[in-house]
Length: 311
Ligand SMILES: O=C(O)CCC(=O)C(=O)O
Ligand SMILES: [Fe+2]
Image (cartoon, rainbow, N blue to C red; front, side, top):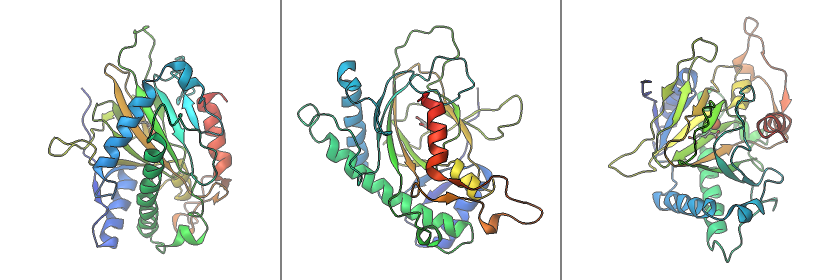
């Protein structure tokens, strides 16, 4: 039985920014994962997002395929994704739906008559989580001993390239004997991810990616008073790892094979897509030179996405 991990808890409503920044720093150095509570996204809204997500995934496959992913927005069918490109499995056992930045009008939406209030729910959710994510970015700047507006001043928050990904892991698949995961082992590509789940277990992390054999630990969803959806599970992605020269970890994680139906909603928080991600001055020195060359955010994301979806 894998151990359940005790992740640090960060309270976004605390008035003491420096002490939140310190706890974020420690969490990002030690785990690359933490729970975020009092994030300002109401439970009612989270429930609506899960309801609407389940309504969409219950549509006939022909309807869903009409919204097949374009410009990284829309539906991805079962097995379309394979996050661990080295695995021999046919793909990950999840179906998903991406909703991207609202301003560029590239999103695809289900028909209003099929799913009234679907679009408005997702738009409201996108705005709300973006605002929590924006607050987190200024705290991350403080956590890195930079000015609070460090990322903002560099244009990072001007048109953030942020995506909702609704996920559905069906529970009733026949087992083919293949090693198949709900989501195979991966690190997230972007700056950071804010995840909520329906409470069904499955998410695991591997804190030492190069240690063999790999040790996987369960990340339980934080459920308080029997109510779901309390906390976001936040994790650092590759872009932040590169910015910080690996001080903050982009931790390997996966979702176990389905045995029970499961829903989750990820929010991939990214800065502006044209920003150049390069080692921060405060994170390198003569004895610790930059480990990665500078890269444009979109170039990195597109490379990883094309591997994960064989685009
Ligand atoms: O569904 C989950 O719990 C995690 C999903 C995930 O890691 C991802 O989509 O990047
Ligand atoms: Fe992930």
